[in-house]
Length: 407
Image (cartoon, rainbow, N blue to C red; front, top):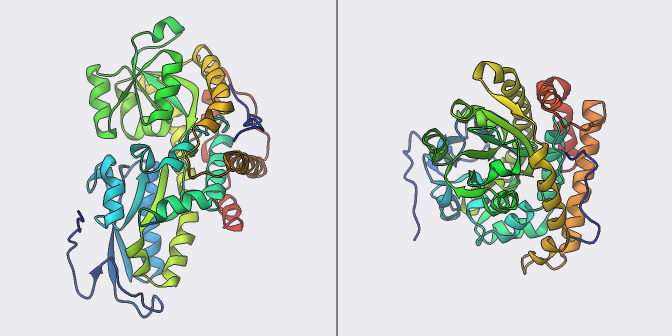
């Protein structure tokens, strides 16, 4: 499996309104001229869209994010989170955020490959992220922050959808495979149906011989339970938070491409209705949000490893699947990635080179933070031990400081 030294090749690279109840002098978000400062503004209540449940790392961090904004604005800005897609279904989040059904939220770009081509192309270049814990999680969080916030192409893509991009986040390294039965040979793959979230993962699973199936997150548990699908491709924390490990007991730590499609966005009309100092508070809260996601993600990996025995979960040797998957990823990262670049990308090689540089910086942040180099982790025992490190080996405040220096 990959170490932190994996690199990309050098040659690469209408309108619905949400009726929010008004209480006292509070009003819903939307257009209009902004007050000069938070002290001058009227109270406002905003809606926050997310597919994450409250117990997921994203949900935990999102609740803390909205609490921080309420505290820092002295209650002038309150945000109501709608967890588990209770406001907008996954495939409706882009249009809902764009038109103001939701004022802000976590957007999953994988549901919108045609509307968000740059983001989805970027999601295809995540396999070189380190797949070890804790280094891979720190590297991913740092690199995504540095790159996304400085990418004109990504920022512009969201501006075209009436959205302000606050950044991207990750609470995992690369994604892994949870199945109802162990897969110990490529012959076992034949006829095996795996739920995937987007074309990147569909292509990777096809390359191994799996049959990819598209389902929304709320459908996965029952699909696994009833045998509609045999496996789920995701991160260990999600496997626990969403209960999937209750119905599938074979864990394969394959190096599936990391996720890079969870974008924090604000409806532009809502954004422009808020004063500049609230903008600064939101951007500062975003850095703390990333730190909280990292901490919750690391804790989630640790809980996964600690609870495996009681859950009857088996860590299966992943090498049978990891080796051909890495071969496919390496091949695709050559000419295939360049050929798939959206027309709006004038210089694909520079875009990819900038991402490679962000990954290198992210690993530097990880090594400095953790205090030791990432090592090769290949056996089930090594993988489990790396998960057990959890947040104890990472200084979250130091991580947030590193992000702030790059803002």
